[in-house]
Length: 330
Image (cartoon, rainbow, N blue to C red; front, side, top):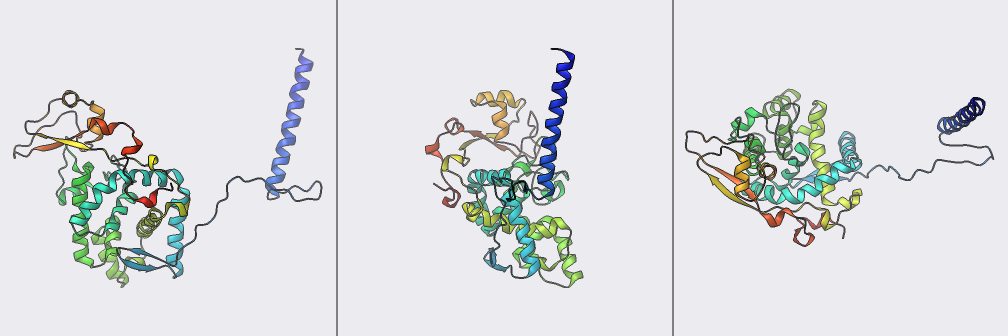
């Protein structure tokens, strides 16, 4: 190929590229309109982004919450639209809830905590059993280390019960129950889970109001209860907000058998092999085990380690139990 011919090709390509750029820029600057032939033209947008309708009221812990006040409506509007258009994450919350809500709900019920607080674990951790925040809050319920210990969780190098689903849920119930004794109001209890009982109590006194909805708080805490209300609304009717799942899309519960450890474990990889699984699976179903070994304390306590059942480790649509029929569209 001659240099002249190559140069002409390059120049032609540059001219075409410049022309295409000019057309696109014109369309952008004119709002997607071109009028060479006098007719209005627009970009073809395959997906529409529509603002989600805001209900007149929502419920939380059997409390009817009116959204007619402007700030209440707009705060809820922000969160319901955020969750609706945060597609992949919200979709995953529903999928994982099918596995974890059957564990969480009976513990809430046993402790006389309203069922709606299961959604708190969703907004806290996204139902990620390994969740760890930048502030070092850990597990489904995002306990800080000090608060976890205050509510009875063992936290040391080899064991961190903030990652133990059942024990952390029990601890969360104790926290929520203590907060309710303080406030007698579940909305204030929910706000305190984010900001702390001392902070919410102090602000209620300083601002001379009785309800967390009426407090001027930092953005994270101000949004917190509305995020709780919004995710509950979506879970009640996912299809209304564009989430369509089939039975086989939900994550199934995995049955486990428990082995009591009374003498410690020197090597969890070897321990796992004794029970027909590998180290990865052992840790997946016992996230609270934080080391490759387990040393027992001198107080004589023992530990129950979960061993997933082999038959539950493989996908089988027929064995999936749908925890809430509202979640599926078929």
